[in-house]
Each structure stands twice: as structure tokens, then as C-alpha cells.
Length: 366
Image (tube, rainbow, N blue to C red):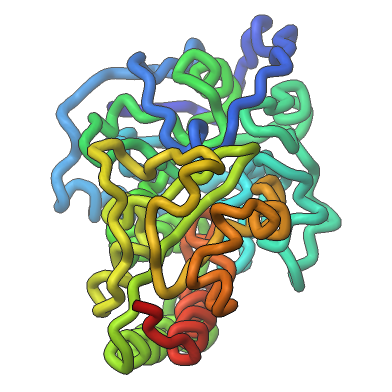
């Protein structure tokens, strides 16, 4: 798939100017796995469908990014975006924006599932100049993007690993139809976050470099080194004791037990020797449990999703079936930021160290 736009004389369709998104909110777990069928559309774009670029062609696309022939990048759906010049007005899904900011690239606006000003993703970073394009999942304000003259939209992909990524919905949009409306405003680049951690991190680094980040800088090389050191610390912690770790997300009165093979960080933890509990389901990403089923699995350590829109852990602790679990009674719990961790080596290093400390302090409970 190719997405080509000549920046001079860009025309925004009247439909986009008039579009008002319906107040449609989906729970974040469902949104994370959106992978409806459809095709990428851009009514003012010259678009043709090709076989996905091979590795050599993808490398050439990245090299062309800083050249005199314009800007080009092939994303993880196989979509190649080509512009006359490097984009300077970027809109980003919050988690992708969190990575870009850490690379020194500040989007003009972001959209996500919670207000960006209170999102811990941006703690310590100056986002006063960043406009909110939407704070509820799937409710993105297209008029604001048009007014900001956005020339690129950056997001991540969290589709079923067994699905066709060329048909994936990037995060932030409810379906391909809504996504296509925003492609009428600016091309979209999606980085796959549902793959192994190193691959996902490297791909976001590729995009950051194409957008102007210096991967030879001392800051970046330090972050890479911190990631490697933190990986060794987690591996050592996993070797200390034989611990079973369960990762969960809680929304409403549903507990979602994560399928580690479908999460970049959890699958990486498994590579490092952490025994991450695998729920008894063939479903991708998680097994959904009611509060009454909260004690279905027993683990030595529980890590819980602490995104702003997830249910607070205190609410779950008050549920008898959960509060009586051995890990809860032993206070062997900690936050899990995997679903929201920016694809940045430094951010991942922080999580690895946090969990290395948690696992080192824990004891087997069975």
C-alpha cells in the first residue's frame, strides 16, 4: 500500500470539514484489539495497492526520509507514506506521542483515552504547547486537526497477531471507516506494539530517526544501554526465585487476564525467564473474568494496569474473591504499564527495573 501526497496545494475534503464524530466510547481493552476489515482510504491522495515492501525496500524508504527527494516511511501495515518534505505538524495517539516526545519530537496535538495533561505518560515533560485532539477513545476532533494543518498522524497498532496487519485499525480510532476519514486529513503511520519488545522499540526508533531524531546522540545511546542493563536486572530477579506473575487490566466489573505472548513487554519478560501466567483461553490478548471469577488463577505476584482510565486497584482490593488471593494478602502487587509504555528504550528500562525490584522482594506462595 502506498500513500502519496504532494504538500503543495493540499485540499481538505468538505466532508472532513463538516464531520462531527459521534459520542462513541469503547472500553480500552476492546479498542486495543480493534482489527476490523476494510481498506485505507485518502480521497485527495494518489494511492495504489502493492505487495508489502521487502526489507531492503523498507531500508531504502528510511534512508530517503532525510534526502532531497522528499520524505518517505513504510509503516508496519506495509503502508508507505511519501511527502514532498519531512512532516512538521504531527498529531499522535498519546502512547505514540509519549515515545516521540522522549525522542525530542513534540506533536502539535495528541488524542487518546484520557486527558493528556493528567496522563502519567507525560510526567516531567513539557506539553503546554500540545493541543488535545480528544480525551475519550475513538472520539477524535477532526476539526482541530484540520485547523492545526496536521501533515502526519502517528499511532501504534495493537491488532490480533494472527490477523492481517494491512487491514489493522491503528490505536485511537474505532474502525477502518473512522480511520479513513482522518486519512483524508493527513496520512497515518502505525507502529506495531503487539510484537516482541525489541522489534517494536527498534521500529519506533526508525520512525523517530526519519522525523529528525539523532540516534547517535549520547542521550539515545545511554537509553539503549539502560535498557540492556535493566534487562539483565530483570533476568537476574527472575532467576532468584520461582515466581508466577499474572498481569491484569480491570475495567468496570471485568478483570482481563493478559495473554503474555500478545504483549510486547510480557513476551519479553518470558524471554528473560519470568514465568508469566498464561490464561486458559484461545482468545488473543486476554481472558475476561467477572468479579466472581477473580480467584480463578493464583499467582505469586500480580501486576495491574494503572492507566488513568482503568479501574483503581483499591476498588478491586475490596472484592472478596480478589482480596483473598495469596498475592494480595502478601502485598505482592505492583503497577503494570505495559499497555501504555511508550515505545522508547528509556521508558522500557524504567519498567524493567521497577519489576525487577518487585520480583526480587517477592516470595513463592505455593
